[in-house]
Length: 284
Image (cartoon, rainbow, N blue to C red; front, side, top):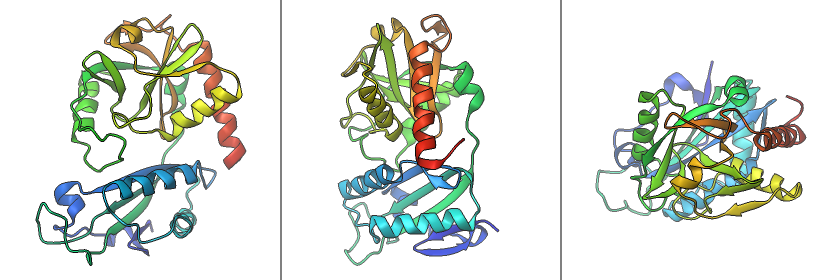
């Protein structure tokens, strides 16, 4: 039996239902998180909980649980599903109410759900790298909120699929923002360069870990806007995300990045990232 959480209760996944007037279903009125699980332990759980709380607060949804209570529920869910390696998907919506663009009455209770999924470490792509394609960033101006509104991201990802690529790298005019489901970092002359964490991108948990590791190991970092031309001239390029970890990008728009293979600094950061995971969650 696969267990899920629906508003604090553990139920069989086959019995989980969403009302047709849930505001997440009708308006995308909610936020979510995806948390990696290694050896049955949530990786960077506090950081994900903080971002989940911040996203909910930014759209005026009051979480029905404290972070400690929520983390306890998720730990129980991991145990009930005997999850060793995979993810937890966590989502909250403003609740169920008659369809109206304006927020419903204050007494409407948010709907919170969570489920687990087994997911292997993407060893092949981590080793060989992936291809990407450029696409115009058509999303709204609050990408720092991890909103359920992912139509722009989905259209970008579909473009990547149609071009035989793993990821779509988005740009506003000439400025690179982020991937459809990842953050983008380039390496030039030994310096890691990435878009600053503002309202135009999602503040990635994995990216933040990488920036912490760079600081600890004296790897130069510049958090600043960079252009398509700079990306094309990068020595190395990689993406970060909860499920993709630190994945090298070896080609963009069929144009080779650097030497067309994962670069030495990317490899070093992969190794440091694995060490950080093992320090929190045990040997992989």
